[in-house]
Image 1: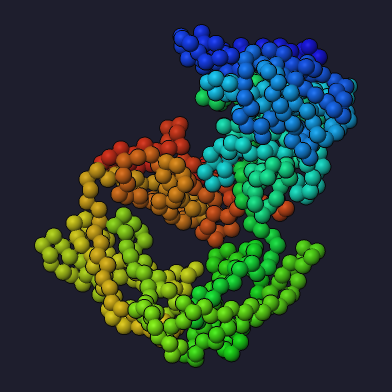
Image 2: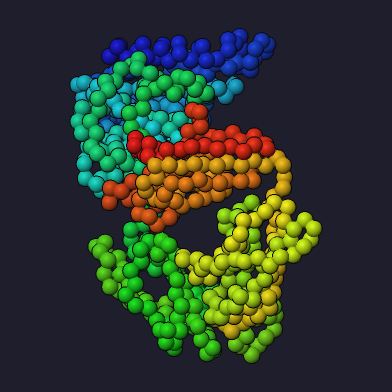
Length: 596
């Protein structure tokens, strides 16, 4: 048992170089000298690390520290294999006492992990952590497994994810019961599952919202590895992967061996039913389904013919918009009859009919009712949004989106002119594209290359469009010029070896927003003009099902989220773009996904 005791002193030895010396008293407020920067250290443990034959009932562990301390985050004192109830902790002087409400399993090796849980009582210096091992059987299991958990979209490490190890190899095990072993990831998304048996496992990671160590698809993200895994590393009290480090010690943290990489994603729901229904106006409504890919056999609205109903699914086919294209007065209560495949009590999709009744709220009434008080101009007008951005007009054109579908359009009456630096106007040509995913959205794209210093004006005349309510559109003008700020920069990506459909996104430094996006399936040069000085990332996603969106994975279908890589710029996944430069980068795409 004493072979594990050197680990205590080794942790202390590793920590001391990380902190400056201090002459502060660790039991009371310092009266002079340098500030105390050294965290508490364990000086004794009862029973000793590596203890065997620990009783399964009323077991008690005592950790003695060299100074007084507080438990900052009791949830970060984590037992593996986890019990139904978390370990109970209390402080007695300089001792931390850990007890268990549940009975421990017989002949089982347990590890107790401390991570960001304890700080000294005076300065709040955090104890980096410790892994304690004991067994209720005759021996300590000797294998271990390491890895890293990342976000599937940003590839950023995920702190505080719960990694679950199962000897039950059934696909549904993670949904039904607690794992054989579990551990939390650190600031680097790194985990180590030490002192486990030499056998086959399935491994998962979840962002455990309620800390019950069971995956709940409705509220939690998940990651998994497709194949069965057998540990190959031997656990030892001195291996770097088991030791706890200051998370700011980049060299030591990155030097740890990570065998497996898991990518967290939010799984789309699988149970299918109508989850939301809203009457948005006299002649429109929408239905939201719980899961994507809603299967509708038939749908009609009482009092109207099938050809008078306009419907549109979103790209995921889990939200359906409906409009009534009729001059007949809209009913006070819209009755929608939906025959679709609904999930039954056995989890099967079976035919079902649902009658959705949607009353019309007073604030949604417009021209068809005799009471016309408080009617706004927009209530009797074909409403639309028309816009263009100087930075993206070359790629995205002028964007026109109507509130309701239009039944009559005269795009030939739209006037597009360019105005040069001498204020001379020239009529310019444009094309009209209806969005394939949104029948209310159109792109008006200039045919000729836009020129710096020119102003471009697009005017929609009065009564150029009429919507399903019979309302005519007002006129408007949108003017745009290419940015002329000399501090702006540009980036060109020359992509070769493109043998699949890809989504190429320009992201900001935090990777939380897509600034520009392209969908490609062949070699070419992508332009990202008018960029402010800063740090950017280029994310390339393999569009496996060719639907032009980044798709998530499915646990039960053994489908990983679509593969994502970030371009490497001289050893960094961020590109530093200074002011007033023109950058170009050649990328051979064929090599990007070889190791994914």
